[in-house]
Image (tube, rainbow over all chains, first blue to last red; front, side, top):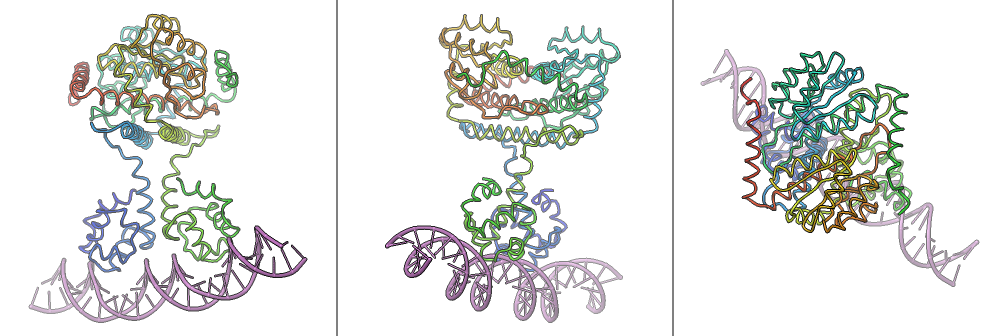
Length: 283
Length: 283
DNA sequence: GGCATTTCTGTAGTTTTATTTCATTTTTAG
DNA sequence: CTAAAAATGAAATAAAACTACAGAAATGCC
């Protein structure tokens, strides 16, 4: 766990003097990692052995070892901070903020995923007679992307961003068909109804959505990303990106599961695309 | 820069003994950060002052300072490594590899972007009479996503993934119109033709593509992501993700540029979507 | 090749930093 | 209010890092 957070969490288990040390470190971690034990002790108004004892209480070998750990968590923490864009940000600032918060979001998503469920989803997708990807609004481009990837596999796959088409498709579905529904909130009414309809027609419903949402309740398998909703109006919906990466993961799992013969097919598709391109060295 | 990479890069500037130190560190960085100067010296078969001199050559204050830096780059470096998926990977392995390599890719993209060009692109987009997003194949979902975002701004925007529609749209374009073309390689023939056609009709062409590509040459403004092409068949096209984040950046720049009045409009759209949703606390 | 100069490298000593020991103070529980 | 336990810091000790210097290796010049 992050050392700073660990210190904060254990603040009340420390003794009075140790708490002084903790506070001095929390106040300026950057200073702390560049101080000697004597300096830090002076800064925290305690003796050197107290600092040493403080370090040991955090399961480190001693002060130098503690500094090392702290330095590492500082290095880890900074680039991943989810900083919000504000009105006065210039291009430099908002560009890096958006990239960094997207990366932070992917990190959260990665840690929150249940790989057993992913494996299960891959299982079901590989055995499907037909796969359909449905999304509405912002999620429709995710569905579109998923369609594009699975289409290359040369298997029956479809994608609709029109509710009427989605409904018709569900009504025509049968056992062995898999419907993948994409919705960040899981509270988009029409999509919840689609899930019900699909299940009534014996299709298997996989949802890329939030746990405990109405959509999740109506689905057979839920892949949740645990990415918080966007509260800030300036911040883009990073959840989309996480959904896309999850699609990549499913696609990769699918490819691996299908084995060698199948991968040859994939190579042929990639080669086929090349014909519609300018060659790299004809410029 | 990452300390390990720095050491590797400067290997030939070191003296014979210093190189021994470098190699000992590269062989096992984790051991190095937990060693004393004496241990490391013994391990590298050199004297202690040599280790010290080695540290100073890398612009650190001394050995402890060097250890701190090394520790930090180790903490930073690991999650960003672009490891390839291989046939024997289980769900756990390929999931984290894909997430991590996507994050690595975003990091590369972030560092390679020219914020001046971004600012310029935002300028042009804010002044456009009409904006069109065109992409083919995998890039069409990126175009679709961009359309979705700009559509919320209540400005004339369109998106086609059909070449014929794209051509018609270009022929009907005129001065003040902006066409945004999305192509990872920049070598998709039809799209290059679209760029020419658009410029012949006085539209401004922004391309999200690779530098030095045929498409880049035909465009007025090129935003390049510097993400390498996917060579491995298992690896998904992370470039798409970088493109999407770039779209997010442009959207954010657009919002900021338009100012307060405009943001109220954005809030209204967000509120409007809510009506089609289940409330959060009715479950 | 041989000599001078520069650069490298290690030994030994010095300084700084961290840790341990132990006596004193503070806190806690009965 | 007292005894035991816990916490704290002064001082001593140990460890680690650094410096100065001298000898060794490499380089350049004739």
